[in-house]
Amino acid sequence: MALTEEGLIPVSGLLSRRVRLASGCQAHYVTSGETGPAVVLLHGGLWGASGAAAWAQIAPFLGANGFRVYCPDFPGFGLTEQYEHAYPPDLSGHLDFLHEFVTALCLDEFHISGNSMGSQNAVNYITAHPKKILSYALIAGGLEDLVSFDELMAKLPQPKEVDRSIVFGYDGTTESMRRTLEWLVHDPAKITDDVVEMRRLAAAKHVGYYRRMNEHSVFKSPDPDVQARMSIKGRFDRLTIPGIYLYGAEDRSLPPEIGGHAQEDVLPHVQFFYPPDTGHQGQTDSPELFGRVFLEFFRDGKVSWDTARDAGISSRRPPLPDRVAVPETAVR
Image (cartoon, rainbow, N blue to C red; front, side):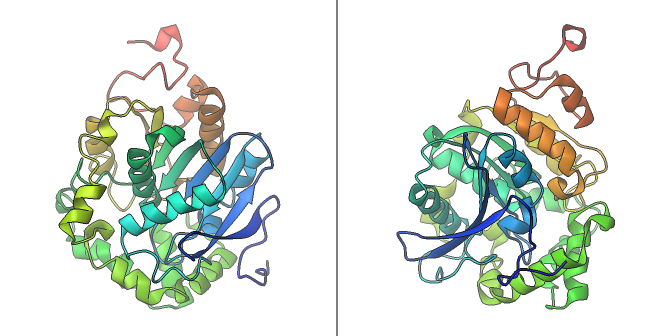
């Protein structure tokens, strides 16, 4: 399949858009659906990531089922341009970008989801602007301040430098991009040649920004004032906004027994799932399953019991009846 003139995969029901933000940044995003509640989907943080690369299957599905879906490219990713002097190269810059983005599109309330770095960006935005969020669904991300990323990495059997080589070892070639994507997903058959090429072209646009952003642990600013502003401890974990969390059972970045369980332990009001045969970018490995979970949760406020079981609902604690439609026979 040939890429479009913008270097994107042509996907039915997925439209490429641009909007000029207050900062002067020209933000690129893809969208699907014309009516209904808004959903904002946030991509991850490895080389070549973008809204189109992360959500090409989920966004059209939600758009065809009654939602207006928006998938922006963050500064340093995709086709977003003119961001260099607008935002610092860390997640505080992403937080400001996202708020300008939803403001420019007049999104007063919306559901939100993010994968990996996008999950952390979603958490940061929910914490900073809770009144704008209807509900949220996180995928394989982090909760820096609540759960130390460095402490979790230290529990891995291999040195954490091996893991970080995925970030810094990319050399711009097609083969290197394919290796990066093979680390993200459990099923290599899901990695098509056109996705590899789309991400390779996008990565080439932002090499300098990407390396600067990754100089600090979890893209964290070294400025203590910025760290204080971005801290979620005692804030996100106190919010009552409906939330669910999907953590792939085959995640190579941090296995669920290290990364997922630690986060589940500090979020008693969030329903966790560990979907089988699913890696770090679960929406690519299991798009039909993730689409069902998102549709039910965003539409009905609960995941059906059949879908919850298919998605690997956590057995580490009783299911949350305000997040999952739990039958009486399943109540423990």
